[in-house]
Length: 335
Image (cartoon, rainbow, N blue to C red; front, side):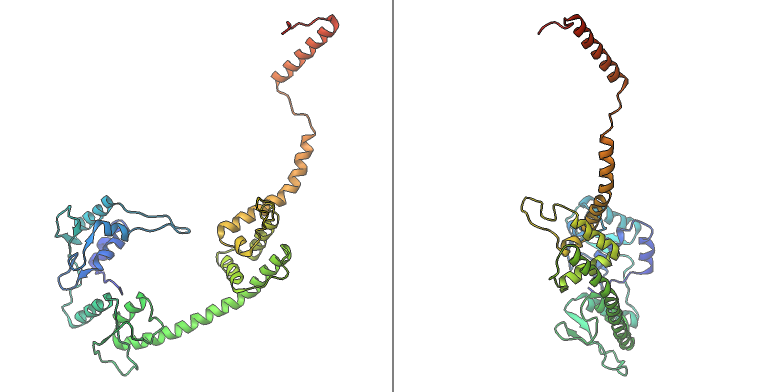
């Protein structure tokens, strides 16, 4: 799917309510019939389909988002109440048929041209032609099948399809030139970033070699990628070294476990932010533990302070034992 045009009226109404209406309405309008402005006839839609579309799995830094069927019904009711759509099906039918009240009316010549491109981009097996030179500004309306190679850096992906099908053909060629130049600039920028990060990667790798005694290890592509990912997460060289020291100070990871194996791989230490924070915490505990251990041992030599109740009990016990020694008899009856 290339793109879904949203009119100004639809945008104004959708911005007035909950943000979840945006993805719900765009998903519904994606299957709208351009001739009649109705969704749910050529391609059936249902509440269960809407639940699956709006479902989002949990990811790092993102919470899981789920929508129930009752919430999906409420979303359709909201869209109907706002006047964006009109329900043509029965309220409790399994399938939903909606008429878009502000759908794209292609009455002008340019409007029909854009509508045709939208319909073409909606079919995943068709892509619009790219002119071979800037003199070719004529709109032939010809489209090729997906298996034909299209000479553009965005030949893969929906964004490229939407961009090629949306702009006029003359501007398409200029846009192709701009995208080509921007792509080369981005490639040069990425190469520059990689070259700048190479000394940092080598410094972290050499520190891991010396700290954990791996003199024969090589900086292969996997280890390089692990270190680069840790740097991309925002961790500095010192933080990565601190995590490596934390692994070296961990008895479990250095072989004192049931299997007797050493877990000091670089891919384990810098796997993700959770692992890095775990080993950094181990390093902090080990560095603080030496001084605190001496401080704790020093305090263990002192007698613990007695409470008033303990002091009175001890004194009474001493007096009873002293009386028993002098009198030669016990105050307590024999058991």
